[in-house]
Length: 224
Image 1 (cartoon, rainbow, N blue to C red):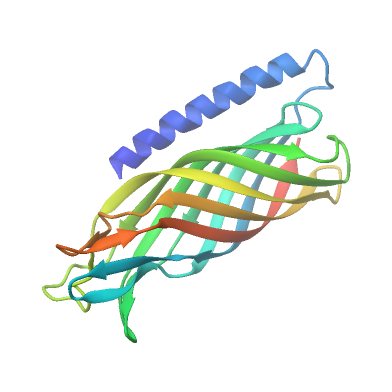
Image 2 (image 1 turned 180 degrees about the vertical axis):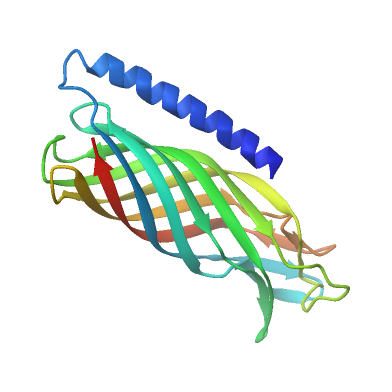
């Protein structure tokens, strides 16, 4: 967890400094940066990766879960904005094969900076957008390890944590409902390499594929 906190602090500092610098440059040609701070909530749907070993084959991954988060963003230019974001995902680890499934309590944290391209200029009441960004995502198994675990010949669900590089791609729409309140609805794809330390392949086994989490979110923001 200390490693994640260090990465998060560095990313947050760089993102805020970068956004602040760009906003200052924009003041000469725009009315000034428009900031937004808010919260997000929704749910995510993970894909499963294939596991193969001499003992058989199956699927491994993370169970679908709720998602909550927060963001701080601003309009850098007429159509371009940026956001520093955090999301929390309480999702159990899993491995399954032939109708048998093993699970293990788990969770994930994501912190990232995204650029947003709006199809309507700032000041518009309705602003569809697309977004892309990057950061880090921490996966963690939180249950107590046991001597035996079902399907351990395929993969072992572990009480450890692992940080992976994160790419985020998505889009949505913002709606200004009052002078200082904005609603938003969006879908995001959180893409990372598979966490092979938290969900560890058994000796001789292979886990293939990336881990996608398609997340649907609604948000409430305060603009200033």
